[in-house]
Amino acid sequence: MKIIAHIRSDFPDKFGIPRQSGLVDELEATVVFEPEYRIPESLRELDGFSHIWLIWQFSECTDKEWSPTVRPPRLGGNKRVGVFASRSPFRPNSIGLSCVKLNAIEETENCGFVLKVSGADLLDGTPIYDIKPYLPYVDSHPEATGGFALQQMSGTLNVEFPDELLKKIREEKRKALIAVLSQDPRPQYQNDPERIYGMDFAGYNIKFRVDDNLLIVTEIN
Image 1 (cartoon, rainbow, N blue to C red):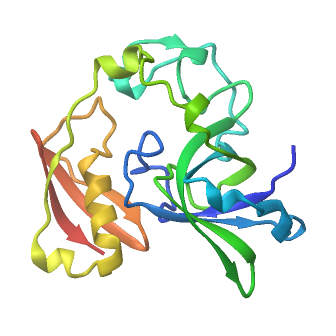
Image 2: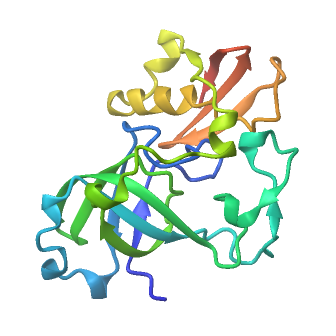
């Protein structure tokens, strides 16, 4: 397996990354190819597709043992299911799969052609093994069932972001940050309204707490 590219995203740490791709359309990222794959012909006709699949590596889990059962956060971290019934990173092969929107193919001075995408759920620097076009006539199945992943789904949180704190965030990052916070970055088994959480995003450290269905931003560094 050869690494063909890496992604540049706003998440230097795993905490806060959306649990699935496509949950936060406002999140923007860039796919930067390795020098040997910066060949314009390899991207010919890709601009005709609105979405692409990224096949990537859980790079922070490569030295960890896999387990035949895992405890999905969606079930509160208390119930075990088979690893092949989950999207856990602790797998026999540490491979991830994400569908993202392809916004643009841009030529840069130092990195050749790059892909501008949105909706990615990848850590900054994640290695990418392959890119394939999303085909709606075979990849979309509206009748599909979602198993336990749908049983515990809840709505998004309301976000209280004081103006004096929001102004510290670059304007082009505000919508994405609020959308990420509304997805509730906390582990789903934690529910202490007094606990202060910290999340790194786009060069900022965001402190917040959650009381019932309200996420309150308390500090920006």
